[in-house]
Image (cartoon, rainbow over all chains, first blue to last red; front, side, top):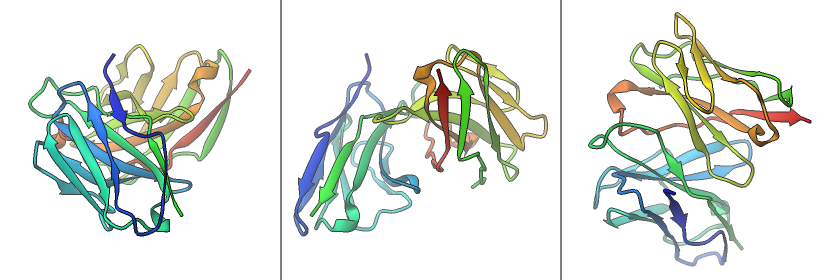
Length: 116
Length: 113
């Protein structure tokens, strides 16, 4: 079964800490995405990547950065965590333009991050 | 980007058909219509997508209005496992394969046993 795996289901960090959220997919997908989900706001796109070492800003990139050194891994970095970054973080991947087209995104189960 | 309007919530009885509407009156003629759903405590999952004609797969059917300003996701026989938030998302066909999907707040579907 194809999978997107997020390293932690729950995470508690202190304000000001540097936080790494890891996401790995085993489907040889080209595209990877990071979203955050908050009540009443739906899913909002933070960053995405269409290829290794490529990254593009989504709708709410402020306070975040990403790294994609290998095709299967896409990391979200909170340089200095703040309480307003407490949220559910969801990683997704998709086949990409060079594949055979789409059955859309495959999402991970999410990481619930609490910043105290 | 096309704006979508979906009911905040809907209820349906188990084993009945469910019709989930989506209004996308500003959709471009070259936008696919994607549907995803999010089960409790899980990430969203792909349901179906289409462009102009109606589409069917093992999960659902998608009926697209002739003017493409609205679409309806049809679950033919709802089960308790279909209780989820359903998202309707337009996306330009030019992005096919490299979609950058914008999720709204969707419709929360409750299934009544």
